[in-house]
Image 1 (cartoon, helix red, strand yellow):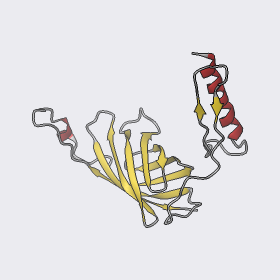
Image 2 (cartoon, one colour; image 1 turned 90 degrees about the horizontal axis):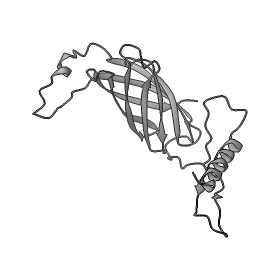
Image 3 (cartoon, one colour; image 1 turned 60 degrees about the vertical axis):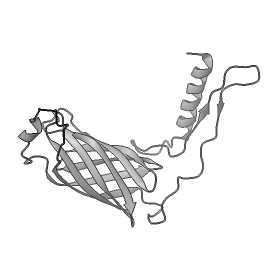
Image 4 (cartoon, one colour; image 1 turned 90 degrees about the vertical axis):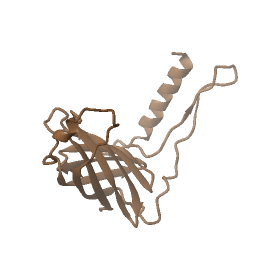
Length: 190
């Protein structure tokens, strides 16, 4: 690695660390951004850093500007899995839909565009992480204990509609036999 790339990496870490608020509890994220622009080494140029962004991300007019905590519920159902006609594996027919179906709760914190949170209920205890741009949310769900029986992993997508985030979560168990689709609704809380 060249000296300039190492210097750029060190500078980025220094800017991010300087921007961190030492009084924030663990799990909080920096809402500003730092951008490094590396240029080839010349006598007149070196690695430069852009100043952290000072303006917060745009927020939809239908959502409160201070809506950092969103809470709600989901309803999980057995999802139909379609395979190509030539596939003879019928493993998915072994799922009778009796597990990982029903209701659950979902809670997320939005800091800038970053999303972190948790879910519990029919799909098991999960960690949530993703992005939210003020209109759409995209996130992943991972089991809190990946080794637990029935641990579900997947993705979620939703859109802001009249101040409510509505969308779906699609996930499956570790063996891929149990496949679930859940609809969710989240409202600003606090």
